[in-house]
Image (cartoon, rainbow, N blue to C red; front, side, top):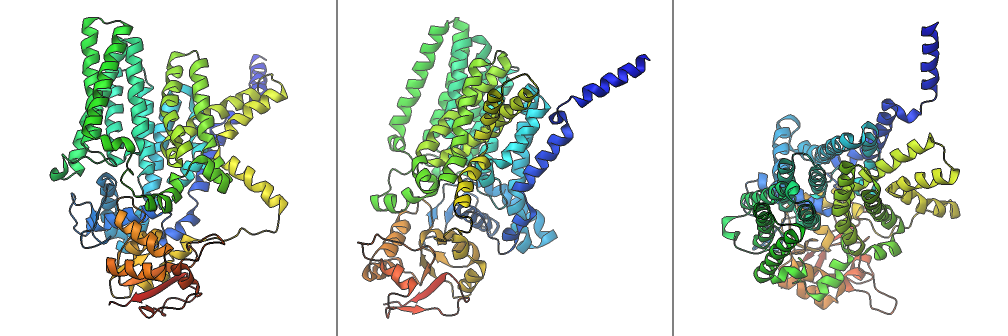
Length: 611
């Protein structure tokens, strides 16, 4: 009789359990979400003509090819851009190395032709697995299995992850997301302060060596450990010392690994170099000062004074060593290049600019950052448990710089986006729990709405759905397609022409480098100021300007894409290059049309006559 009662009680308890208590169900949801990001059909463009998602991915693979072809490790110059001198790259070899190693490993099995697309598909998948492992372990330790799994369910549905971890993304942003997540999770731990501070510092240095886009986040992490020491004294001095030591050690080591000795004393505002190493040294010195302050028994005010003095000294040293870097990496850019190119780059536009032109993109990518940062801040204030409060405080500290940068330049969304899945998972877990508790309908709706605001797909659908309802049969207008412009068949035909220097629209440059043996005048790369200005003048000017640019640069070919032409207002004259590509301008006698391009190709090619 007792066993029967117990059995019935267990069954009644199981019947009353929420289906979201099932690991199997949450795991299946994760798999469905991952399929949305890694649908095997999305491999087709990568393997069919090596069509990579972004110009940066193309440039990355071009650099990897050069490395495999024997170009020196310390030779960062892209020699086929504005030859013969070429243009030095500020990108890190630390991403080139694993990509090159994977290509070498797969070439005997697949052949070089398949090894490259295989690596382009495999690399973002590997980095997502790394991100997933870090996020799962960090969330599971503090919040349990369900928020940990929900993080993996939400991540593939956020705008940042759909962009940076898709097949073909071999640029460095996905690696940076993994790095900043590891830094924040290490600093969020209160146990073993020296060890976790050292780990955070080492990874922080790695992230800076990969690219300075993470600099605001790393600076915020440094302020986090300094403030922790000022407030808590001896209990946090070891973490500060560990972070500063790790940051300096890895920064200096990796700087030396990827920088030619002749450039060790050359300041660069857009890459890890002496000015930024000085800031890393300041972190290490602050750690030493913290340990000394503990021996002196300084109180909180004393610790604050020490931190302020060291910080002011480091800032003053930076200003003396590299005052130009205070204006950012684009300080030397002339007005024409800044207005006609830089300010038109998607990543450089502000949130309001993107909102006016592409509301679905703006809302899906930026609003989740704001919601997640606000949620982390509120929870850091409200949560009573010290360990969890520290976690939310660490996340809020590193999220806000990237979020604020994203409002001015949307490129800030990349590093801040690493933490959106964590906050959304916790909010969604709370919504699942509230369903089983007594609550009003309004409260339940409000709790459920919170995680939805952090999911990019929800915003994208919310913007697109009303449009479809209002005009169910309407088709989106095609204003230009770089996928069509960089069609492998057309570029293969261009590649069969005798090698020469190509004058083209800026964004065509990386595809021409990747799929042909030609050299180029310009690519979307801020150090290529001469080439950028030449391409802009050629695209926007008269026939005389176009001819002068072609002559001065020594170009052999003119290549234009008819789907991405310079447009002017109704009261402004049409640029000569635009009319030439559209056929509204007669071909001058110094240009010979190349007529053997594939039928229907968006590329128009002319051979430039010398003299």
